[in-house]
Image 1 (cartoon, helix red, strand yellow):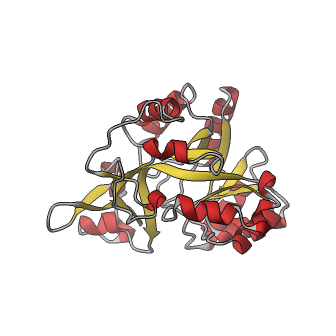
Image 2 (image 1 turned 45 degrees about the vertical axis):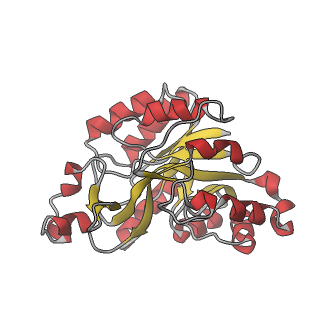
Length: 291
């Protein structure tokens, strides 16, 4: 199995992003996704910056993908999405069905991100016919569900035409909204947010009344309060899974990449903490942790 780094979900200063990808070039990651997928107001880097980083990463032997925005709220964002798809160099991760349609019209291959609602063999077959190279399974689904889907006759006959990727590390993106919850938590209006997300490099934690981590606020995106971690479930993934995705964090991402690489066959399991979970993969509640 290959290891991938998803696009950075949080809002970091440009210098921090550049340093992160300098480290990524020397890391255990095989595939790296680049781009702003959460909020269009986050403009520390633009498409030209990401393309330059992509060229550097490709020279370091990485497979690079450009990720599109998940929630398109204006014609300007649609035009920006079109620029990503027309980049002429790198395959695009489509995080909106409009990006899928545009790639299909242009006869370009694409990757279906985790925000694309693909829950059955007919939808997956449609995406394959549209030019799908790889898809990221919806986060809330299980290994049993994935096995059942991939062995459906309609998919089994075309299994060699695409790869399957699983989100395996990080706070899970659960929902996107026209409202900005981070701004609201500071009593700001969305249009006057002053880009306060940059003050929370790993999002803003929300706890339940009994002190349990419930959600992470990340601008217009809501994430799981527990960090999803499938490092000890890696031996259960072959032959269903081709790529295992880790979502970047401000600290420790590359150490976790090494741990994932070392435990591909279960030879170096890791003791997980009380704020981590792996329930969805094991067909349980998302906050559950199966040792």
